Image 1 (cartoon, rainbow, N blue to C red):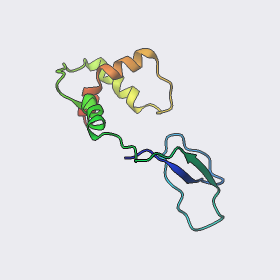
Image 2 (cartoon, rainbow, N blue to C red):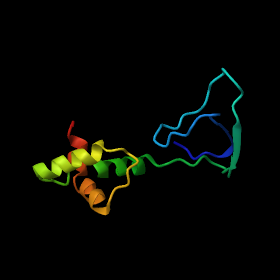
Image 3 (cartoon, one colour):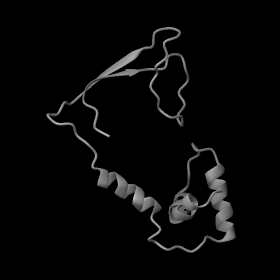
Image 4 (spheres, rainbow, N blue to C red):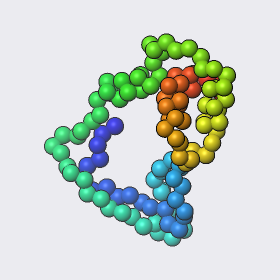
Length: 113
């Protein structure tokens, strides 16, 4: 992907309540009232700025790599992880909850439940 540059038109969603966890999508509706448009002008560069593919892949590899061997979490920890994963995604997590998720991130990514 490249960095946005120049004049960008962002078509907004009129009269709808914001969904803080919904995927950001472009409003391409041709039905109903005309949608408001927000115009934003970004810096323009002589050449397009691209995210290096190696850098983008490296971040993902660090999160899912099995190079760091891990032992399975205890049954109590697995229950706690399940509660944390199934709770409302907008619930604020404690520092301990964040640490337990980070410590067991490989287990979470590799487990189907």
